[in-house]
Image 1 (cartoon, rainbow, N blue to C red):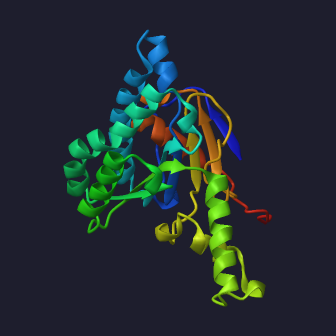
Image 2 (cartoon, rainbow, N blue to C red):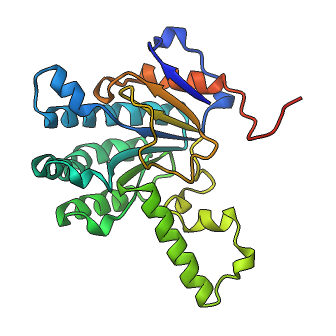
Length: 255
């Protein structure tokens, strides 16, 4: 089911059911550029403020007991943007993790990054791998960044790996199931929370943009007009509140 949030409620109006909390929430963080344009600021100002929103939403999600928070940080298509903007975006992981990892450790949050990491600039790779290493022993929520990630590319890579293993005799083609495919996708290490129950997209756009195409087969979709730099703890709770009102039948019928 798709739902568009037109106006976020306040914390006082939102009563969440802890027994119906989604285990895995995924967010398409959209609207940084428009947020900056509305204020007559350069686009990078929107990305900088959006980084602060990542901190706010991460802490809120952890406090709510969410097991995995996946954030779409940079897609395989985002390389088409102006070079100055791409270079700035590639510098953000280092800035973000330098400041935020101590707080993540204090919150027991573990960093995971999925995507084609080897294609990133060297400094970005170093920052990403250091954050993963520094938080590897944390046992709380997983903060999962999709960085240089694309859903179709992920599926193609998985199919290539499955075909290679079948050729080597490691897999019997007749035994391939959806569970097999799960094990070859970039979300395999998030098991048993591979698939998000809730997908949120900010900024008013109502499309998936090549994000987690396999994993969101039965996700609940929430679209909000709020631009990502303005997305708040209350906005997150409002989206979860609407998720909790859904009748999730997975193609079946409830008596």
